[in-house]
Image (cartoon, rainbow, N blue to C red; front, side, top):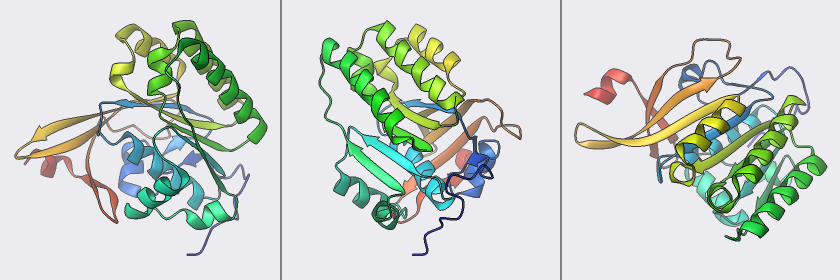
Length: 240
């Protein structure tokens, strides 16, 4: 595989791409650099696949990625992405991608300390793209002020040029907290599963993309297929 490195640290890369043109178009051309992006939705709706797609698109553009995972080891994440047609091993070996497995402790006191440790690590690493998959346990066991403080600190990092993707299960947040977090974020992507015809399809709702160059699409219907990753369906086909 030829690894693209020309744009590392380059200001020429203005948006974060998924690597799939049809999906980028629905997102208004891609996610603007420096965005704080909340990817929220029900279980198995495609949150991890979506941020893995953004990870691969970023690496293809020469952007360095730090990937924090509470659900995978380094090995299992590499295998999972490879199975979706998103090979990242070469980028990992070159140091363009760093994977940090995180063992979550469901404890209010430990959660507050984890927020502090994560923020310190982000600042020390200075990656251009940061992915956290997922924040669910931290969100469920944290005090509201700690969670809001963490998002405020992440927003400050993004204001200085970092782009962050945070995934969380919908049930981890009450309606009021979700509204407050969405107001802080530049991008809010909501995922769910719906029965369309005789099939279950994943639905991506583009709720908010601040600073998008084009009009954002409201809904994206997709499925996840081996060796292909996200397969986007035209609206007419999705409703058939």
